[in-house]
Image (cartoon, rainbow, N blue to C red; front, side, top):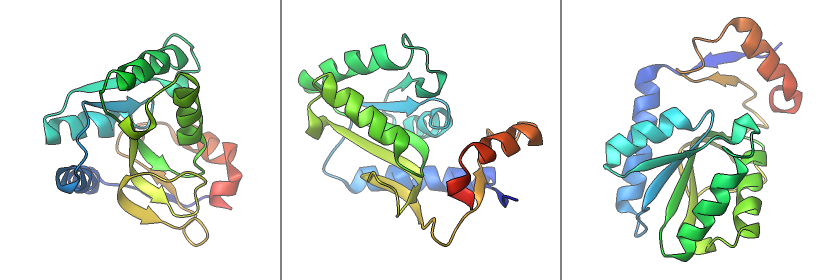
Length: 171
């Protein structure tokens, strides 16, 4: 049985402030914040407001090419023109999403040094690394299924199904 751990709105806002501070002290400023649909959309909107940087989105979770893969090709072209893109997601857990995005961007010819990733939660055991994080977790010891504020409105049956779909994260 998974342990569902709600992240209160106030904690989420603090995580966004941590990311904004990390960006501010960095020598790298993105041209755009890119929200990764679905979980990265709310954090990207908040981070856009916190930093004053414009935001775009890629709906990776939709699996609809026009909204997931095709925009990555257009975004890769923008990096070759000198724009910097910060992709934002809620959690870097296994690294699967970030790995897919990095591979798709590389295939499309993105300028590697013009693409970075940020997450609210970063699993230290993930296959992929992010440049910015608000908090680091270790899935060897922390098996919680985190429920972000935008997920809190979902029926419990949906949360149960989401957690059951990736048992290695919570077992």
